[in-house]
Image 1 (spheres, helix red, strand yellow):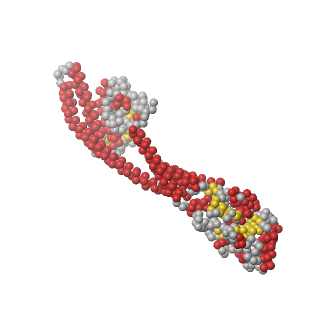
Image 2 (cartoon, rainbow, N blue to C red):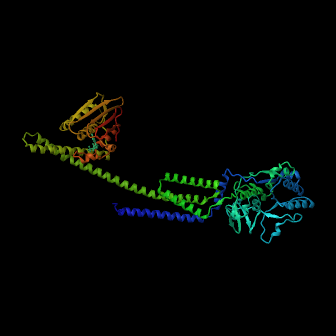
Image 3 (cartoon, rainbow, N blue to C red):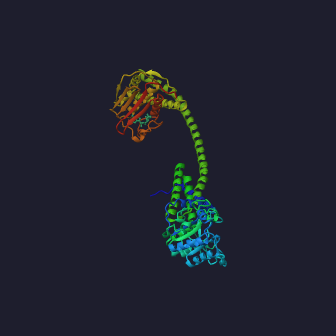
Length: 624
Ligand code: ADP
């Protein structure tokens, strides 16, 4: 049958439940608060870190880049003319390029009108040449998608770059691509679908999302210079191997370092010239071909992470020990960062990190001071209680000492009177003699008890002053044995002594006699009748060793470490008629240690006990 919980248990479990509920409510409150903060800047930065640390990210191998560089300009004494452009295009056609994209300002191309017309005719004829437009005209403004005379037959295909300037992180970094604008697919989609027809349907594009009427997706970036490239002049002159352009989407652009529009800042670097425009287009097209766009986790995941982070942190800070809590939080933090990184590297998942991390920091720094206040208050209470207890303890000791002292005189009188009666020649009846004997023994016991208490009181209040004199320890032992012979005889216990001759050592004879007396008396008290007690002494170069061994009941191992504590009596001793205060060994230890010595016992239940006292030969003791 199980007992119903006590009133105290019920109220403490209620208090526990209340605390948990309060913690949960707080965690939810803080999650709600943090979810409202716009952390896109930090989040995007953490995203960039994940992009940068993605070490293995192959390309589809379908893209080639051709650059007009300062060397090109130097060679042609200006930008390549329409004639050179025609030559390049013809070479690329001959090499079997899948598509050719002009992603620079073609209007600035120098050359005569017939040259331009020829270039235009070659472009129109080939059918797989595209001119990337940098803007996306609104519906009804399609006329803007054509170039001006004499290149009026070349149409523009919008392929604008996106920059997080007004929305998202607002840090000017390009992370996204526009897939459609007003229902029309933009150039990268058209080009990618030449290799991966599924890309033509935006619904198939991984991670696509709607943003103000456009379809967008994140770009799976590769570091700058990942895509293979050749210089304009090398392709025109036929130096570049024609085979490298076979079936490739060839992007032609500039890397002149003249105009910001030639470049973008990427997740890899925030330098103005971090990546060329055609590299951006290459990354965009390649993402669509491989369908590897990073997928951003839905909003509720952010909520969930924040909630879990705040619950965990409040729990850890409020319930765990500081170092353990710190370890748990640090490993959770490391685990979470590691998990998010791996999810991105391997699965292309963009998990929210900024808000959960902020939650952990906020909860931690909010609750640590709170916990400190609570703990400070608690230790102040302990301190006060402790102070009160020591005062009470002092009062108690003083009171006991006073009482014991006052009891000594009446006992001395009782002892005097009993001695007088016993030594008197007056014949006492056997019953009377027995009664007087009992009075004498009882008053002896009482006196011993009072002396122990008085010693204890002295130790506790002002300590004990050692009165060192050179003494032969063997003399002290013999005196102690003699004094206890009668007691031993009553129980037919034989005290055997083996005392090695030794030099006198500086000791306080009174105190050491008390120590040895206590050991011998205990041995007699706790041993059964008809046993032996062995008292031995020996001397080494540094110390005098005294041992008192008996054949008594021994001391159970679980009580061994307690027997030198004040007022400790073993369970057996307490339930037996053997009298004692529990102070004897405490005082013995105290007095021995005053002499800079040590006392210890070896005993096992049922096998007798051996108490050893070691006293240093040199230097006396301490004055407590
Ligand atoms: P007490 O006044 O109870 O003898 P002590 O401080 O002298 O107090 O001893 C503490 C306890 O150690 C005793 O209660 C007893 O249980 C145990 N003890 C001490 N000496 C012996 C011994 N020689 N044999 C068995 N137990 C002992």
